[in-house]
Amino acid sequence: MINKSKTLFDKIWKKHIVKKIEGGPEVLYIDKHFIHEVTSPQAFEGLSQRGINVFRTSNTIATADHNVPTINQHLPIKDKLSKIQVETLRENCSKFGVELFDLEHKYQGIVHIIGPELGITKPGMTIVCGDSHTATHGAFGSIAFGIGTSEVEMVLASQCLMQNKPKQMRLNINGTLNKYVTAKDIILYIISEISSSGATGHFIEYSGSTIDNLSMDERMTICNMSIEMGARGGMIAPDETTYSYMTERVFAPKGDDFEKAKQNWTKLFSDSDAKFDKEYHFNAADIKPMITFGTNPGMGININKTIPYFENQKTEKNENSYNKALNYMGFKQGESLIGKKINYIFVGSCTNGRLADLRIFSEIVKGRKKAENIIAYIVPGSKKVEQQAKEEGIEDILNKAGFELRQPGCSACLAMNDDKVPQGEYCVSTSNRNFEGRQGEGSKTILASPLIAAVTAITGEIVDLDIFFISRSRPSV
Image (cartoon, rainbow, N blue to C red; front, side):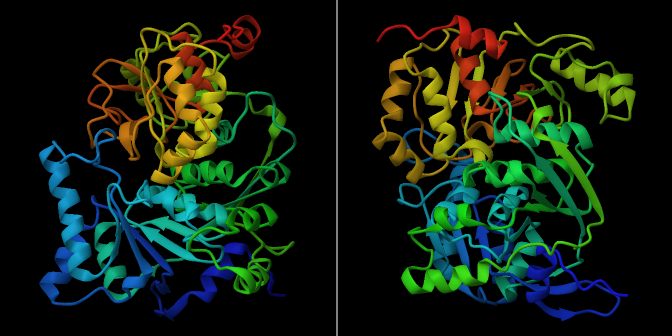
């Protein structure tokens, strides 16, 4: 007997199939296309060479984020390549009639932050961008994934993509989280359990009571890093938390239109007996505050544990690669990272650059002082986040503690702009990747939550969180 039950992914995918190619991929309609300055120039050039226009300009939104400076954005960009890329984006958007949220525009920001916060991202949509972390938008119950430059051109030209339907995986996380554990710790823990390639070829659905109790900001952090375990994307079924978040967003439906849309969104869930190609179950009680020690996001440990010996760790199968990663980081098997001196901190990116992340960081540094050795990049993910941080007094808290709130951009997530970590320096980073040289040539990235980043910024080293919060009372202000 054929099982007619469908997953959330199945339901959305089926509704967007334009054509099935016998023995080949399916033509998938794309509801929303986000573009930025790095992966769009060649795509627009392709359109120009073929003498065709953007098929549906209203379905494409552009912003500048990867290459932009995060201070003095009102001044001309100094870096030659960055300036060319941003100016080329402006020219292309003007030429082809695509809406651009440029520098100093009130909606400018990291592409995967502005979509949700503006209500452009909605449940049940198909969403693509020439950026792997497009998976972020899946937190709203949408199929969202990154595409290559040739595919960017395809979507601009036709609003469609040829795609093979991926396999499906469900990750169930149930129970109550331990203290100090954030969404970032959840996803780093999962990747450390199944490896940085454990979901290759799959689209993930996250479910369970732990996920149900997360805010939208937290859900976005988790879906954002789906790609870091090899997945095509990640998604979470929409619920009342989703609908509440979307209420009164700038580009979300209003009034009766919102209620009509919500009626459709409530149908977006996996049927109770829907089948997945692979399924995992995790207990929230097993998850502790996490940091990475290697050069891929799967090399993560409980902050209080020692770096595992090769034969005892779960995710790296090649001993030479394992040792190479440790050598690059300057770490040894069996070593504890407690007490490791850190000079750089980065809070931001499409993973942890939302207002909730700045709130966590500011709450911990409030009434305390930045360690003298620390250089910190505290970067809001959008102009909206920047403005809210100022209105809430977060900027004042940061300034009094010795930090500076910068302007929106991808910043030190990747070495495409001025915010780079110097060679040989460690950076506790709230971003999503710790590859060799990701934050600058020879830089050494330790992925962590905004909470751990804040504690490290105050102490200047990696510390036991219990000891920090017990022994370090806030100085009187």
